[in-house]
Image (cartoon, rainbow, N blue to C red):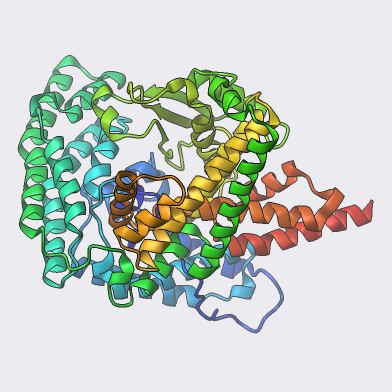
Amino acid sequence: MKKKLTFLSLLCLFLLCFSSLLLLNACSDSKSGPDWQVQEDFGTFLDELFVNEVSQDALTLHYLVANPEEFGITSWTADFGTYSAQDRALALARVENYQQKLAAFSYDSLDSENRLIYDMLNRVFTQELAMSEYVYYEEVLGPTCGVQAQLPILLAEYTFYDRKDIRNYLVLLDSVDDYFVQIEAFEKEKSAAGFFMSDETADAIIEQCLSFVQNPEEHYLLACFAERLESLTGLTEEEKKEFLAQNQEIVENSVIPAYEHLASVLSSLNGTGQNDGGLCGYENGRDDYQLLLQSSTGSSRSIPEMQTLLTSALTNNLRLLARIVSDYPDIYEQYETMQFPETEPSESLTYLQEAIRAEFPSLSGADCEIRYIHESLQDYLSPAMYLVPPIDDYNRNYIYINASPSYDLSSLFPTIAHEGYPGHLYQTVYFRASDPEPIRSLLDVTGYSEGWATYAELYSYDLAGISDELASFLQANVLATHCLYSLTDIGIHYNGWDLSDTAEFLGEYGFDTDTARRIFFTMVAEPGMYLPYSIGCLEILELRQTAKDTLGEEFSLLAFHTFLLDFGPAPFDLIERGMTDWMDSVRQAKARK
């Protein structure tokens, strides 16, 4: 869903777009290998690209870089950037310029890491330009990943390193209304062109906005701000009092009116949408959906190929579930009475950190603190979340736990694995400790990161101290559920399923009509949400099986995990290419013995 490298990349699972299309490399005829001058010039280009793109808006900059000056970033505007048709045109012009500069480098004169970055940039630029044809298909608002839903969370967790951060935050906060005005103008353009969101989606966002503005004197942006002030040392009581007054004035007179006005504008536009179904309801919508999925999943497969992969995995896992139930009639009793080795989140994190040592590469120096989400945010967030730290302060990590009575914290063990070890936290810190080019923090691939975290979640059941059959049962259930949801998403956005079709499909798997309706409108509102988890995990499982089949007795799970983590986030066909070289090196090492 990403069209430009701005703070919207922080709001969802979709940081950057990729495509399977490649531009022709403007390579020289030289085959002599890396050239130091070309390498140096390419490094300069990457640094300039990173600084330019990370500085497009203040929220992206703050979340990705703790000390901007160390990257040569000495000035920036404390706002959210711009969002308009004109801004989109300027962004595309930047992409075309980047593309031309990239093509000027000799591919054969780069080393392997820079060739990988070259290939990844090539895809990003190609994807950006291809997606520009579907500008009105993009939706920046959404019940889960929309800017109005995620922005308050990002603001509430905005880290204060010093007084300057507090001042920048207050200026940024005061620009919410201006940014929303731009979004509203774009939604009006979409409405006039017949591309406004469905009534159900609009109603959900309107309700969300109105909920946000209730009880302004007790708003969580006030409480969270006060807590962060207290955690920052060196502030005088007078300074705290002044900052608190400024924050309250901005929340009450800028932020809350911005949400009220957004709800009003959406109400006035409600009913103007001409498509209550998936993206395929628009002209060439299937092409847009294909681009969207390839970018978010990191997979070069066509949608029919993804459907085949998902259907096969769903069938296999359902068969496994049936076989386990048949062979172990007490499996449901095992499930109902199971206990994870640790029930407290911090203890689960410590346990997993130790338990993965045998089959995952070592990681040292990464601190992680378990924090509990502010009570006023509990109704808006999932049971746990991990916010990716700045690239120059990656050893300080936080996993946020939602202590809402709606969630059973004693069952968070696999969720902690997903968010912590060996999931997001572990993968992020491990890769950043390798000192990659900063641009790779922008060239993230959601399918890799969420696929890895889902893989880690499945792996955690093998470490949970439960029977092998129960571990297999739970793993198959999780993977089957992801595949089922993803097939539903494809059915809606690619095959043109309506609510009746969706309910019929889900009904075959025991979903009632009300649940099917909720799933249908969730997927209509935010296409492709589930695919990075399922496709990403299945791609990793296929890579593992390929390595195992190819290497035979030389295969090591530790070595495979090390390769995948060292390679870092990238499209899966590029990882597969790198894995071929890795497997060759393993076999050559064996031959030399």
